[in-house]
Image 1 (cartoon, rainbow, N blue to C red):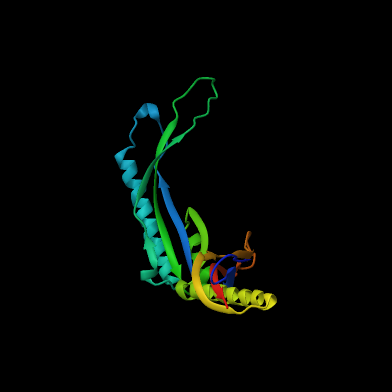
Image 2 (cartoon, rainbow, N blue to C red):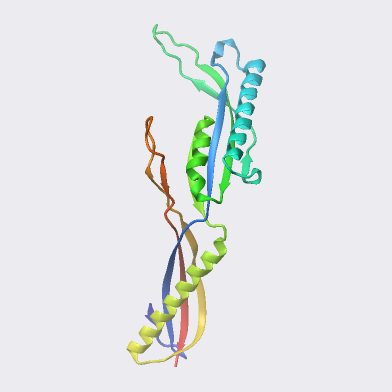
Length: 232
């Protein structure tokens, strides 16, 4: 913050930050299911056997269907389940060289489909994760907590930054024995930034262990402003 000099009228320039913590009211869970064709020597052909590829896809689609049914049975509405498109990727596997000879690597094909869930009942998170693990997902990327109405929270963080700027400017003016005039310029220096937090308090790691407990924490939003006043 600085008191501008050699200006008519004099100006007072203030920087301020505002921060709020808000409890999340929605969550997104991302998972992936994968199937692979049998690994074969590159010497046997560069392309995967079409029959093996078709069988792998059939297994994958069956698992995706079963997963969706389990998720719906756990209480997630169909509109909040997104099953992504099929992805096919070639994989190369190193081959052991136990006889000292260089061998051609093995090749196979990986097929995968992502599944994304939007949850509005955060108490259901453990149940949904149980359903995902019971369905044998191959990759679970964790839980992303968020807000249904981000704009309202962003506005509140911005209001807090502006109120802080006003308070700082008033304090400076009173300390210098001057009076604040009209606002000349306002600049948003930092659009509200989300800093979601999530921690796992306890997770079952063996038979008979207690149910996992999840603590979603709070989402922190920061906003920043520069405000310039004239000085009377």
